[in-house]
Image 1 (tube, one colour):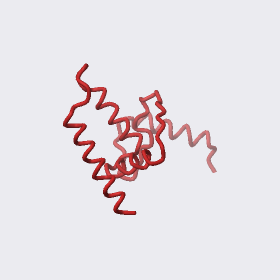
Image 2: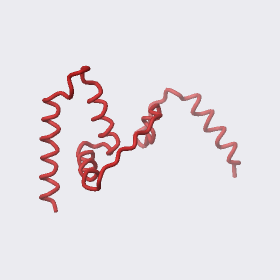
Image 3: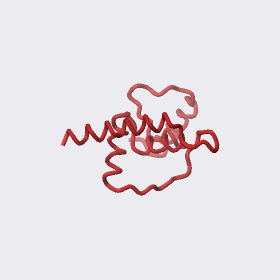
Image 4: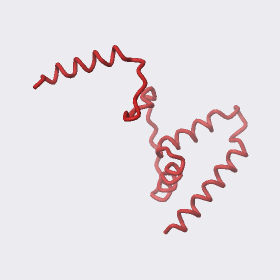
Length: 106
């Protein structure tokens, strides 16, 4: 049986030699945002979190990704203009639709 240090060394060498390799279909990338070093803690009540999680699931992302996307969109708005009214209306409508779907599913 191979020593764990040998296995780790071999894997490290392989990774270094194949830095630009494209992950295969069977690969799972677990830390795609590893360049993001700051963590923001936001408190939501249970209902707010469930709404966020449900919307995220419908979008095919996790709750943190959806929250980050919303924050970055708000920050990207032109200085002094506030949030884009059409985007806000769109988000409001989609959240309302989601609430209707979640309510009818219970």
